[in-house]
Image (cartoon, rainbow, N blue to C red):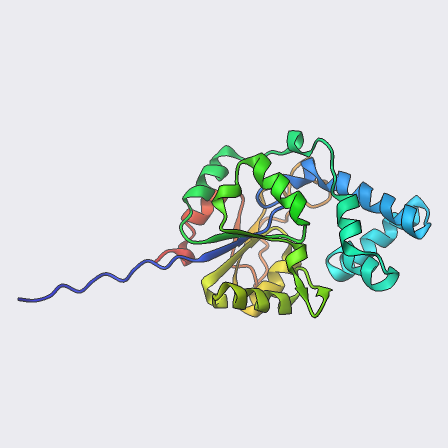
Length: 239
């Protein structure tokens, strides 16, 4: 009697989702308020004018990927103090919004799912709880977890990404980063992860100055999407 060959099992990826402007419209709910709080913190603790504080905040964000790193490295600011002071955001829950269809699609997406965000944990959990997304994720990895050799190494630090893969016991080829920030995607692709560029909130009235040019996709981006629903049908991920 001839035995039938079993069909190969479908491969499920481990998904690493950015939080802000990927899972929700942070340009509407948080970014402006957080930026103002950071500038105010710098004004208070470094004695700078409002204009100079804003310039320094933007400079450190562009240079290090996180304003926090510049303040810790060059001014001795305590990370916990800065994160607590700048992410209180009263009324955040009332401003949160994301697509109900994306929320449903996320819960159905096969494979393990993690949040990977440069935001602090107390803020990330407020957002996930407020959106009703907490149960969709096996874990939430925040800036407090991105520490190596006693130094914070948030995205786009390639060493942190490799360390994260080891913690998750996954190879880079098994993981997909879904993210709105191209510099983070470039670093992830260099490590070997697949990358998906979330564009849902890049071209909206609440996010001026970040309009996406149609037809342009960097070589390190595997796919562009405007909704999480598209992850279910993206061809390179199907098996």
